[in-house]
Length: 408
Image 1 (tube, rainbow, N blue to C red):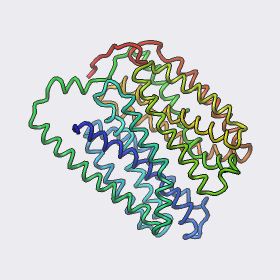
Image 2: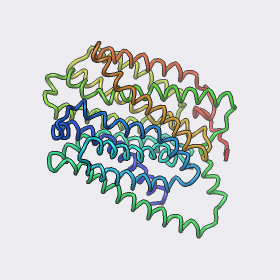
Image 3: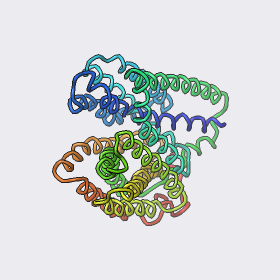
Image 4: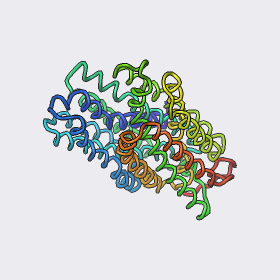
């Protein structure tokens, strides 16, 4: 296996870790700690908030450090830091202590998206499939978090839910550090060829300033809407199944399994979308995905029973399918030395909106119902559809022509 492929494997594992570690506490708090510490679930969950804030806010300095120092070095810090933070969190004996541990996990988790995604697209002309594969690993981290944590809680003490994944992450970090050291030693023995310089510039396109501003505005707008839709659907789906599948999901375990199936199946939609954006116009693919979101959210408003399960899987397919599209656009139009910072800004927008989505869901559900949530999601997806129509009809940014330029 080539060095690039091994590096890609490490990056995919990292994406799995970041989403897994960010969701461990949700299951631990719900199933064990609230009872053990004589607190309600509502009282305990806020201690996770600093971690989620760090997860979003710290993406900017992480991206800046990666661009100025070393992306590989930052990834080593990510693996070691998130693993050691998880192990330290297992030592917590009070809610405040666990909140500090979760903050540390969020701090190191913030490194991944601006740094890891920039590394995934680096040197590639076609980035769609690579981003899609990487995205599948991230979404499988979401899907596996509750299952893995629940299994560890059933078979061991609650601390094991943090310690075991943490130890594996630390071991991964050590292995990645050795891999980077050996690779740099080998590279130092070879001259930096013109081919290598051209490869580093691959995939970046020169755009006029006005077009660049328009494309970035669409990216950040659709990123905000996409963050709202992603968080609303992934966070609310277990409760949606609990309400809409009363005969099929009569226990918490069955609800969890139906949610896992929906997430796991939907994760692979990114592979299809990744292939499509590598071979067809991003504008066309993006508009089609957004239109399907409008359709499925509209259909879902009053559905119950098996049909609700089918449509829920369908809308999760197009929600997850949208994820790699904006990352492909960013990779195509930004220079390599700025890419981590641009990705950091994009993920700041995503995670800021995601943080506000949870109270928004609670408010809608308390005063109306999930039917109102689906109406809002349909309107939001419709806004994304209209925004995508403003992307250039042809040119390098949409993938309609083979025109490329080495801008670095």
